[in-house]
Image 1 (cartoon, rainbow, N blue to C red):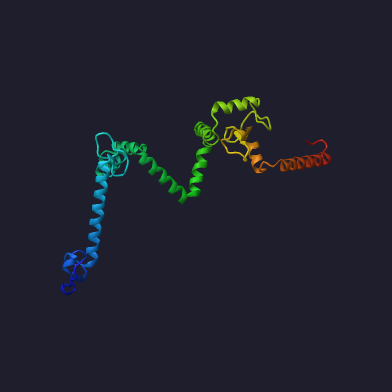
Image 2 (cartoon, rainbow, N blue to C red):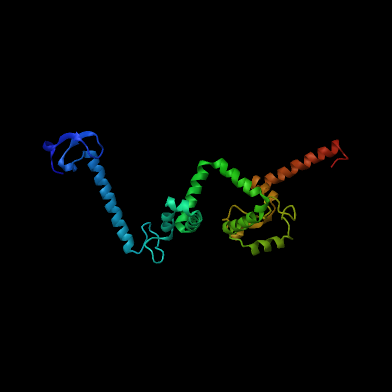
Length: 248
C-alpha cells in the first residue's frame, strides 16, 4: 500500500458515517471499512472461482452431482424454491411437496439427521419421553417388531429365517424358562457370548425371552452368581415352608 499519511484528513466516512482518518489509499473511506470491503471482494472472488471449478467438473456448487438439465442438484433446487416466502404463502401444498422431495435427497437426509441429533443432545429427557411414549403405543407394535428385526439383523448378522430356525430347534420356547411368549416388547432376544463379536456365529448361544435375557445381563453372565442366587431362593423357600407348611 502506498504511504499516504501526508494526504490523510479527518472526516466523516461515507460508509460507516463515523469521524475517522480518510485517505486515497482507503478508497475515500476509513481504514476499517476499506479492509471490510476488500475482504468481501476476496470472498466473492473465491466463491466465484469455486463455482467455476465445480461447474467445470459437472457438479453443483454444494459438491453434489447436478440434476438432469440443470446447473444445480435436486437439494439446492428445492432449497431455493423453499426460500421464496411469497411462494410458500401462495402455494402451501406445492411448498410442502418441495420440502418432502428435498428431505428425500442425500443433502436433505444429512440435514435432517444433524437437526435431530442436535435436538436430542439439547433435550435429552424430552427425547427419551417421546421415544418411550411411541414404543408403548399399541398401533406402533408392528413398526417396533420390524425395527427390532432389522436391528437384530444389523447387529448380529442374523436373518429372520435363521432366527426362526434357532427358535424351532429349541422347541419354539425360551432356552431357559421354556416360555412360549417372548415378553417385553414382543420380540425374542438373541443371547450371545460377549467374548466374541456380535456377528460371530460362535458367540450365538440361543434364543431367550426378555426376562431371562435381562437376568443373564444383570448377572454379568456369571454362573457362580446365578448359582448363589438359586441357593439363596431355595434357602428362603425352605424357611417359608417351615413357618407356613401349607403355603406355597
